[in-house]
Image 1 (cartoon, one colour):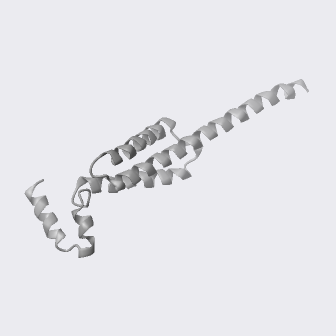
Image 2: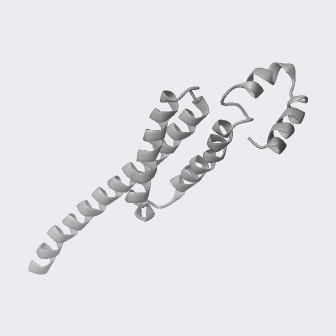
Length: 130
């Protein structure tokens, strides 16, 4: 760590209330990347929740699949490292869940479209016969 960063954290730490000192000094606390990386990753979760309003026809299965797999891998990793990073665990679990839900929406839409197309093809020849 740089001297400037260490000095800044020491100065800020003096203003942290006594009750919050255990969190402040935790190995995965606000003084480390283990805290800030997952904190910013919550933006992906918010984007995923926002995408729930997106029409199912516009969902990218490959993109959602990549997010889902990445979320599952990092969810597992967050429990394998020391210290266990519960913030990293929870954010990646939510990333995976929103992505998997989007994939399910896209598959359901594709299945409905295929059924509609099949029904239209079945109806079209009978209309021509009349």
